[in-house]
Length: 261
Image (cartoon, rainbow, N blue to C red; front, top):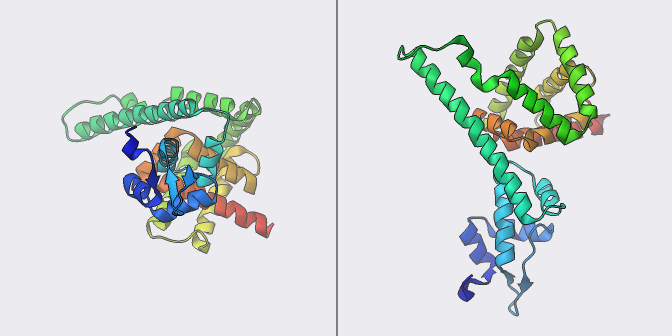
């Protein structure tokens, strides 16, 4: 790095990165991004290492991670290269899945316009049984071997629902439509209407899991939504930044349940 640009004041870094000075002060206060040192004039000064750390923070925030989650990632056992490679791989997987969905959308649009034929099986290419198996393998790898038994129990529970998986997905779609509307209207997490919708979401999970979806379980589900790129991509398709709002709303609901419990 050119010596002239070795250090940045908080104002210079804010302008360079497109963040607010207030945000940088907050990151310093919570220990997420400390300045390299404080100059004789009392200004916070940031060097190359801090610039790279801020870039990494911004990468993770862009996919909806909370500051606490970002801190845990940065303070975890992986070094920066390992973290960035893993994040890149997840984003590439999101890109791959999104590209597949876009291709199917284009094919369906062309089919509806009478421009091409489409086999029935082609309608569901992005939602194959293979993809479901990949999700299950990811869950087991992420949460341990006990998850395999939970998946088996959940499958049996879904089969016992009056309308099976199709009915469960219809309920989920209705819930998510209402949550997106609440999000886009700017309703605060504390609004009773949001908690009512989220309680319907939790009840659906109880039905689908075949066991009670506790407050802790609901908060854990929120974490899962931020952990897999497909979930992030799916919720971003519903509404920009909804992928970060929904887990935060779910955790707020879980906190409310604990306080009422």
